[in-house]
Image 1 (cartoon, rainbow, N blue to C red):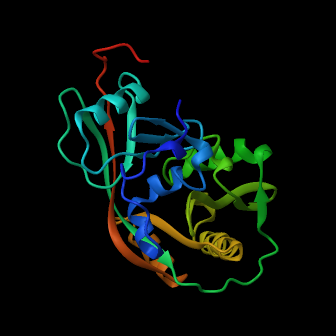
Image 2 (spheres, rainbow, N blue to C red; image 1 turned 90 degrees about the vertical axis):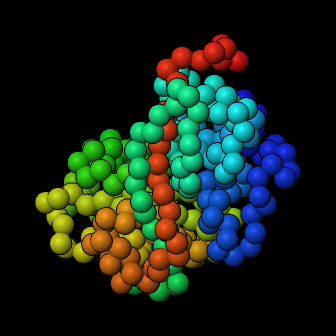
Image 3 (spheres, one colour; image 1 turned 90 degrees about the horizontal axis):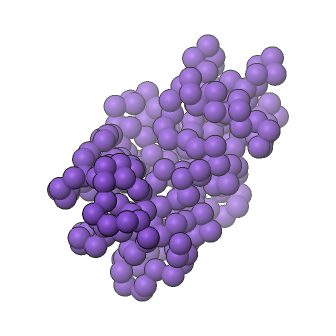
Length: 249
């Protein structure tokens, strides 16, 4: 598998400074700070499947890009994408579609919170249980390789968490924000998002996040924490044909 850092210059738009790099967030991550977590075929990149589900795909794909994606995904394999959803070639099918907002943090400080704990590999079974119960979005067992995760416990049990997902030049995404239903309404998510965002800023990056448009409660929460909507985004999935014309190379 070729390394993502070897993408030919000019095949994708260069990532400009400032907020514009967020327009190509997955590509910027997989050719930047997370290049070591990338797999590539031609102009198509993805995170290692054990780490994250996201793919970087050309905005105007050519037939060879679809062929490369099919071989990287395997028969029936799914691509999780952020961006436009144009027409699909024969054999491909849409799997999900979630309109969202991309929100950026404008730097509201967070107080110290001694109850918050840092999560590590030994906490992953509990983290997967919490994700399974709350469905905050795609989360893979290797997610700790993306960045730091923080949690809150009650009686020794992990009941809320948040962490870092995509990391691109100058920016880090806050993700996997979830609270056990038994403990909602206590402000745990707000405390964790504030703490993760503060850690990102201390590192010199700027926090951002994505949220489903229909999750109006979360949007209002993030606005109270100092995030603002930058743009609308579309999270969507497509599945490769169930059989390939040629053997996977």
